[in-house]
Image (cartoon, rainbow, N blue to C red; front, side, top):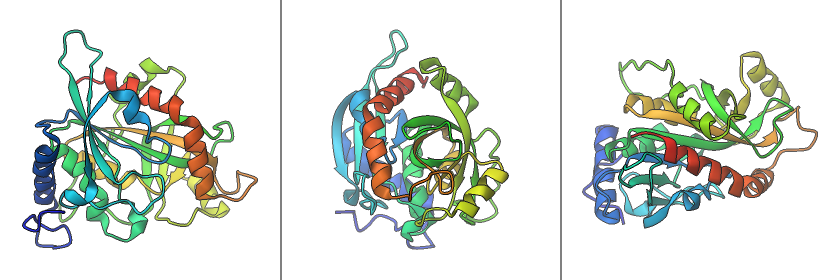
Length: 285
């Protein structure tokens, strides 16, 4: 169980960075990995990517790490995993990835601190890069279910932020152009677009989808943007990748369902898992 002496995210007097450091220390203890090079948040459809990346050296229940809890969303593992993998750089030592399968979504009502806790823990554990993935609705008809799309920017419609107090964080190039270029060395055909995070948990109405398209959105979903903001504050370089699991409301001719999201992710899983693993191997320290 979580160490009762650890600082509590629910206590407003505790700095979220302190809780993240306590979580990172606990991860080192439980995994035996002193330093993680990269972190991955694996959203709907992306869960199999870790198996393509390398050797799992440890798996930890989210409940055993301060600030984490099992995800309340089907398709998310509720564990934290340490993966050893080889770099594509000649002569480089093996690296370690922290795979965060215990994502807290904003709509779960647990507070924005918990939403941001995973990325803050990754930074405290040594990571300099984080890969944020999700399953989403597509606004472009040519993006059929199963299409991976690089996130070039986002629009945050949650009316919230993970940053507390008078702390002003520059979000220019939030989704790293360098990392998107690395991704295209693996698949030159990868498209990119602007991700719009809604609050959820209901799917967007056709009118909301038209609004998102009008203001510059290409993808709609219920995660990622708040995490990306927290990651930038923590000093992480961010790569965002969406898997289009369905056409958004009003574009799709059929009703939306979470079962459809999971099914599309399962069908695309082996292909996008191998793609993501190769991208990670090409990212420099």
